[in-house]
Amino acid sequence: MIKQPLTVDEVVGVADRYAALGFQTRGDLGQHFLRTLDAAHALLEQAEIPAGAHVLEVGAGLGTLSSTIATAGHRIWAVEKDERLRTHLTERLAPFGPQARVTFDDVRRIDLDDGLDLGSALVSIMPFDPELSADLIRHVFTCPRVEYGLVVVPSTSIQLLTRLPDLVVEEVDGIARSSFWPPAPTVLRVLAIGRRSTCRS
Image 1 (cartoon, rainbow, N blue to C red):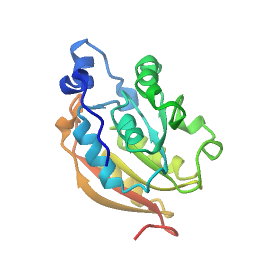
Image 2 (tube, rainbow, N blue to C red; image 1 turned 90 degrees about the vertical axis):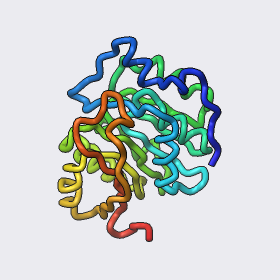
Image 3 (cartoon, helix red, strand yellow; image 1 turned 120 degrees about the horizontal axis):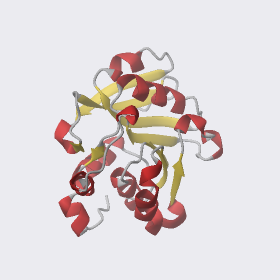
Image 4 (tube, helix red, strand yellow; image 1 turned 120 degrees about the vertical axis):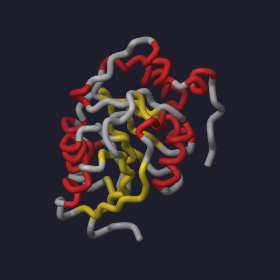
């Protein structure tokens, strides 16, 4: 996997820099930002995305995971609801040109069928609100073009997701609360999600 060189900002940590500037995260969005590129690379490796596949990221935030996905050669559609991040996220993904698309909206209001390829993947750090994260995942998988996913969610989201009859949910790893700013308020899990009829072996 190709890894982009660390810039000074990323050695310091973009999320930590925002914290130092007094940026206020939004609790209503379950907002927490990934602090390191190493954590982003680890998630991408676990996702096992085929070369060049189209990836949807819900809650792109500061773009740490988005830019890692794009650097690896995948096309990324980064969806973010917080308009305060528009300038930062747009500029961070601009070097990838048409390979990176950025949309500022609630993913539940977006026509995903019109923007994704068949066999697309969801790779996201979901909001750290169990019910909201489960609802967003459920919504994304109503789009038949999304085949599978790898998501970071609060551990209590697992019970909500396993109630969805069309999805297969498998816990593949955990991730440290300290990998995020602000630190996650609860235990987190990394989940692989597939459709019951097309789940990858």
